Image 1: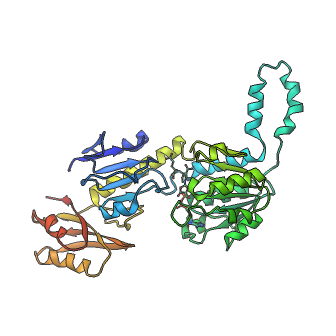
Image 2 (image 1 turned 180 degrees about the vertical axis):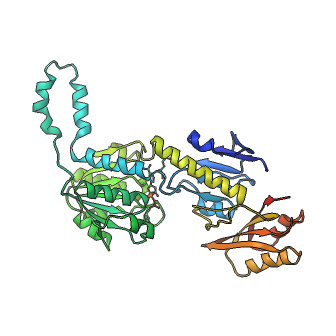
Image 3 (image 1 turned 90 degrees about the horizontal axis):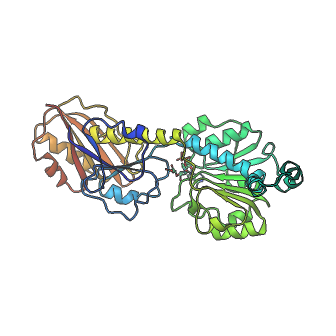
Length: 392
Ligand SMILES: NC(=O)c1ccc[n+]([C@@H]2O[C@H](COP(=O)([O-])OP(=O)(O)OC[C@H]3O[C@@H](n4cnc5c(N)ncnc54)[C@H](O)[C@@H]3O)[C@@H](O)[C@H]2O)c1
Ligand SMILES: O=C(O)CC[C@@H](O)C(=O)O
C-alpha cells in the first residue's frame, strides 16, 4: 500500500487516529499531506499542496473550509453528520434552563457571599432575584430540523413544551425521526409569532447569514429567549444588542463568543462547547477517519460536502481508477472510450454529479499502462485522476 500522510490541524480524538491502518502516518505539516483532519480551524485563507486529496471535518459545520476552491483543486471534503448532535442537544437544553432562571447569577451570588456565616439564612431572602419560570407549557420554535434540531424538538416535547418546527428542506430521515407532536410551521413567521423560546440549527451559508435580523426580531414575541448553537453569523448582532437592551429579547444564549456578544446585556455566552464531550469527539473522529481512509484507499466517497457519494466497496479486479471532473457533457463517453481504445474492459463503473462537479470511479479487467493517469488528465474537464488499486 502507498504511504499515506495525514496532518491533524486540530486535536482529533485518539480513538479516531488509532483507526488508521498500517501505511498511514501522522505528520506535523500540511506540505506533504494526502489528507487533513480538522475541527473548527479556519482553512479559508490557506493554500493547499498539490498532493492533498481530502479534508475530513470532524464535526458538522463546514463554513471554515473553502468548499468550492477545494472542489476546483480536486480535494474532496467530508463532514460527520449527526456525530455530535446529542452533545449539542444537551447543551441547548442546558441553555434553555440557564435562561429560565438566573442560575448563573445565583451561583455567582453564593461565591460572592461564601464567607457569610449566615449564608443559609440570607439565601432565603436573596433568592427571589434569581427566580424564573418553567419550560413546561411554554412554546419552543426550532428553525432547522436536521440532526440537532430533531433531537432538540423531541426532547422539548418530553419536557412538556409545545414545539413548532420549521425546515423547508426537511430530509426523509429527519421526518422519520421527528415526534408527530411537533407542529409543522410552513412559514418561519409562524415560529416567530408563536414561540417563547427560539433555537436555530441551520448551516452558516450565504443564504442564512444574518437571518435573525431586526425585521425577524420585530416579529417575535416580546420577551422571547433566543438560542444560537449554530453559528454567530446567522444573527445580526447589532439588531440583537438593541433588542436585548430594550428587553424585546429577554435572553440570548449563544455558543459563539464574539467581541459584540461577549459584551451584550442579558446574553449567556458559552465558549463553543456544543461538541465538546468525550462521546461527540470520539464519534466525530472515528467517522472522519473511516471516511478519509475509505476515500484514500478505495476511492469511495461518503458524506462529502463538495463531491457526490459513490461506493464501489473494495476493488476485486486488477485495477481501480478515480476521476474527479467537471459536470459537463461528454465526459463519461470520453473516459470509457479512453479505456476501450486500449482494450481495457471496465468491470464496474459508477458516475455521479453534484452541482458543477462529478466523480467517476471504475474497476478494470487488467492493470493500467503506466501513463494512464497523465493521459486521462489531458481530457478537458478532468480535475484529478488517481490510480487507486493495482491488484497484481
Ligand atoms: N455548537 C456546536 O458545537 C455545533 C455542533 C454541531 C453543529 N453546529 C452547527 O449547527 C448546524 C446544524 O447542525 P446539524 O448537525 O443539525 O446539521 P444538519 O445538516 O443535520 O441540519 C441542518 C438543517 O437545517 C436545514 N436548513 C437549511 N437551511 C435552512 C433554512 N434557511 N431554514 C430552515 N432550515 C434550514 C436543513 O434542511 C437541515 O435539515 C451546523 O451546520 C453547524 O454550523 C454547531
Ligand atoms: O469541533 C468542535 O469543537 C465544534 C464543532 C461544531 O461547531 C460543528 O459544527 O460540528
